[in-house]
Amino acid sequence: MRTLGALIFSGFETLDYFGPIEMLGGFGQEVEIITVAKGLDPVPSVHGQRIVVDKTISEKNDYDLLFVPGGDAALIEGKDDELVQWLREASSNAERVMGVCTGTVLLGMTGVLDGRKATTNKRDFMKTVHLAPKVDWVKEARWVEDGKFYTSSGVSAGIDMALAVMADLFGMELAEKLALGCEYEWHKDANRDPFAKLAGLV
Image (cartoon, rainbow, N blue to C red; front, side):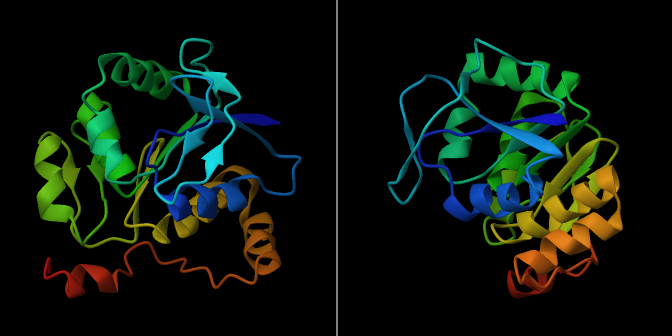
């Protein structure tokens, strides 16, 4: 069983987190999900519901998998030196690193994506990517894989990315069972990105 450090912060985007977590949790036997935050107090999402924390960033930084959701608050977290350093260390230790939406921008702000291809929310693309100028930002992609780093476009795209990670780690058959079990229509083509066109990026 692999451990997954799932970062949360005040104001994280609800579907950014819970959509991929539904897939990454698999059937409860492949991945142990550990919710991580700066402190132990329950953390509110952008919609207000509070999530219990399993570990703080000061307790552990060596997870097999690392997951970072987005939300407008992610860009604020990129100014927190302690969290930025933890993300660098946790990314270095992890077998796979995943970012959704502005969670990718947060990863980019730490420097771990410098020189790598990545993508983020298309609606706010031009307003955010300047915060991580050394990343090779891809304007048109549902998600992007570059080495051990997987990054996705906005919100629901994280579910497609998470399934791609599960297929990579455990095989396509398991990933397809996960999607089927959730009655989810998986968009398997990482380059299929109609939202880039709607946002005027291509």
